[in-house]
Image 1 (tube, rainbow, N blue to C red):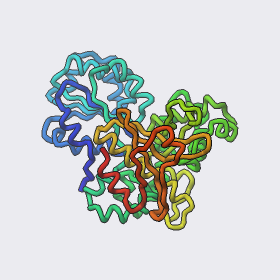
Image 2: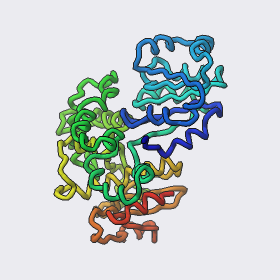
Image 3: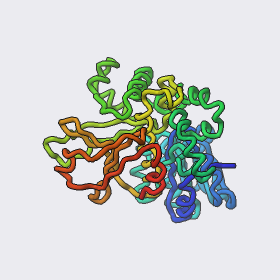
Image 4: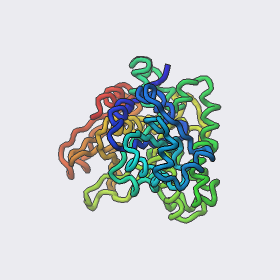
Length: 378
């Protein structure tokens, strides 16, 4: 039975509103599967075009509105998979939006640094854009049940939530090694700006050991023997390819707050653990707290996107090294969270924070209450 994704209904509601539907996400995260199980795509004639195929790229090259009409024939839905592979895809989609308004086009891509750059200007005001992440805790609860998914937490912290990993747990380690070896980064390595892909893999391994910690670009530069600017550009590409993401420091320009600090987290913990070749059970690991912190931030970010909350995520630290794991801000209102794997560990807001921001909503997230915070995130 297919694992249904949270954004299915949101996408369904946006069909035939005169906009291109764009779905972005890492390779193998389930974009094509999501589109295939959409009810509308199963009841209306749909044309599938795969940007990986050379004949598809050729027929869409320098396409005009008449050629697109001939191509779509009687189909009312056109799906363009791996759209970033198609030359000048933004102009192609603009033609659909402007001259083929009765056709609903869905474009999916795994490489945001290529696809977004070609879509933003041509499709201004002409698209609905969605991100698809690895499967969420909430999606799995609906697929099985709450108790089962709580019991699976140790497994998720080690092997992550990629669809193939979730559905093939007995083969998880081998599949993750395949994904992390090169397939996930295929788009990045083919990108013209990458001259030393081995340095990017080294960078990823260094970042994997630093989840939950501030990233020092000078240290990374010295370790890799490449300049700071290259390190930052590689991190940006990895973020746009949905491998990692940055959590900036929260501040209001107070002298005691760290303003340029950033933490790096992985969009999937299975990929992170494969990079450092560590699939030990969570019970005997010394990084369980860091994995749990990354996990909680991941799940809250998924709910932020899927529930269309549009909140901003930060961490906070001052010059005295007092820290808050997670700050969520929306419309000027902030919520503070400490994330503790061990439910016996207590925490409270540091005075360094309350002296600036006063009494703030504060919660401790641990392995006994995490599901309540995730399921009630709004």
